[in-house]
Length: 186
Ligand SMILES: [Zn+2]
Image 1 (cartoon, rainbow, N blue to C red):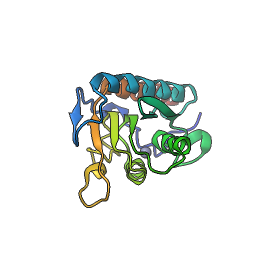
Image 2: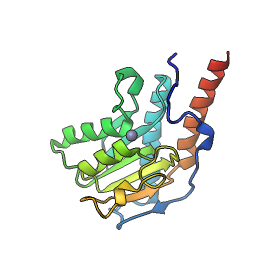
Image 3: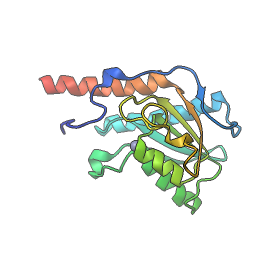
Image 4: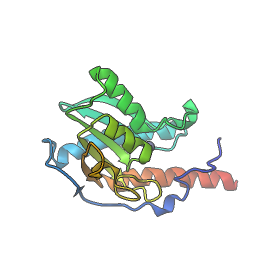
């Protein structure tokens, strides 16, 4: 069992659960709140796969034309790769699927507010719409610490919807870290 040293999610009790929808942006691309919940459940399924593999449970999917074209979960431990966040893997998969670095007409669903690295990748891939679940007060770069997806100085902005299934998305992280803490005490 690997130690959770320097894990930015370590103090999992501080999850701020943001219920309901918070839209920060431009008009919707046609996916309503129900569609968002449906796809967020699929992202949560990815997070559950991460738990089974002892990875911090964050899941992401990319939807294009109402079809899922990428599914991923955080694989930082298995790949020993600090860039192997769920969003990064999903974005690479989606670009490969579309054979284009521009993910136009795509929506990224992710169970946790993206970090600065992933927000950067979202901007680079020109994803027009991002839906996330729980807030990440310690590393979030969408609303919590930075607002990278809606910074007028940058050359791309996204429509952002936050707080979709936030309780479920936060709970899976809280449970994961509680379990880890118990193991450490033994
Ligand atoms: Zn990230």
